[in-house]
Image (cartoon, rainbow, N blue to C red; front, side, top):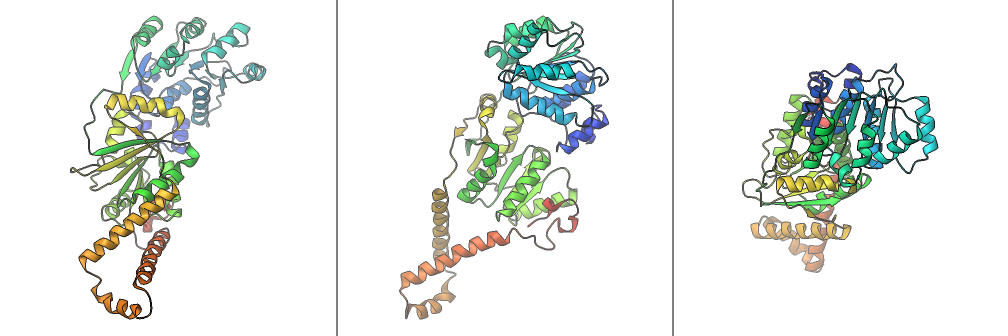
Length: 456
């Protein structure tokens, strides 16, 4: 956690970040946290998924006085889903601090919210409409609020919340700190910043640039989180790549995906910052030599990797920003070869995907997961290609006598079909056996606390 510690973050929050699987600050965190800890007003262009909630959540929580059980920070979000998501993140970040965070949104019984507010809270995450409702009812006081965050500000404006937001701001002390986070920064956002912020620092983390990699087929699949592993397995079985690279957002997810793939018979290994340099180098060596077919990694661990012939890249978690997307998919389609890049998104992440598509200039085509029938058909086609190649190469001559002996008793087509079934069955057994660690493989000597590091 050295990177986070250098930003001036206190120990309880550093501990929470480590437990949550963060390795080092993302660009938005690296730029925003120090500025907010210095009390500056900020306007930050950043996507959902870039770590922006921690970017404002960490400095916000660090400035809360736990002894004053009154609202000291307000975060306005455009939807109840985002309000819940932000509240959950802040609750996790403050798990080692005596700080109470509450989400307030429409569709939830207002009586329950009133009871919670009366008991006392430090941080409120609210949708504008429900926040204004409580202000009009007199069920919440904002006179002790010292930090205001507008999350997904452009979306709030698009949804017509500007008047509600301005009415809420009018109830908050003028000497507050204000932070505005937005995927885009159109003129109405700048007007809002000029009207309600003082000497604001504008932090832009995305720059339009063309993605000129025509040999990479770029796809996205809309898939809920519980089905991601199943979807990944389908893709790997259908494409049957010699080398595939899977990107996850945290080291904990790398461990989870790696173990799930191993349990399903794939020769998979993980790569993240908790592993020693020796284990990481050993894992990469096995991947380059083809002893590992699937490498699961974080962006941090994958920086600077020089791995040729990666046929498929899967973004198991949506990239943190357009630059990360470009960096990830650039691992395939090298040296003029064709590559395939697939990004998993849930329905709530479609907006972020569109921003990535617009900023990178990429055309990311919607695709469906291959069906079990398509997977079986693909496996059969690959087997046919292997048999045709073996016939052409002529390495079967020393089996000819055995075939002639069998032909005296059985039909040649039956003999061929039986041999093919044995080949197919051997392939399945090989995958199953691959789930068992090999003694002496890279990382086998560092089992303590690092099962994911052993190379199968």
